[in-house]
Image (cartoon, rainbow, N blue to C red):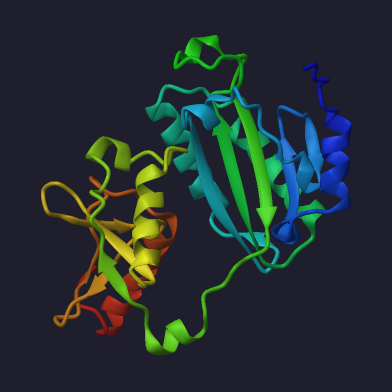
Length: 257
């Protein structure tokens, strides 16, 4: 039986005519591969042979937009640069150029609150594991609406569990890469067991972090403690919290951080 090739135009027209409901939360995109900024969610495409997809060979950051400003954008970009360097990947644009992309995208989306997700991948060009067969690193960015936690959590608290998924090895914990399989399995286990958060423990028995959260504890002795950044990701938000908490020492509300 003879089959004809399907039309890409028809496929895109289908999405335009009947977009999935969750697309309503997607506000704008940037793609170095497509070469521009786009409002349409169907433009949020990634080449199937991009190493960021089929090998997890890429790095990313998620940055909150609060009151029309990025929260600690430069700290996120410095961590992005460190993650890229750790896997031997050269960023395709300078720090200033990436900032310009992020700011322009936010202005186009024109929102007070939201989330920027910024990805840098090794790029398309081969389905092999070799990083030397690609055409060059690519930048993809998306801004979505902000999903805030249930206000009741701040009153009643949340339920946390210790995950059976072992935390990432020390080296990989320092890299915010697109390989998030362990994080996904932690979240899956957490959901299936009826908890709000899951906390990982490494092979040495050290408490580490959540699927997408840093962890801190205030002890009965008023000491604020955080798992060492030697074996957990150096979180931008928890770093800000630790800095602010230094003021509580001066006020006598904490003994140490």
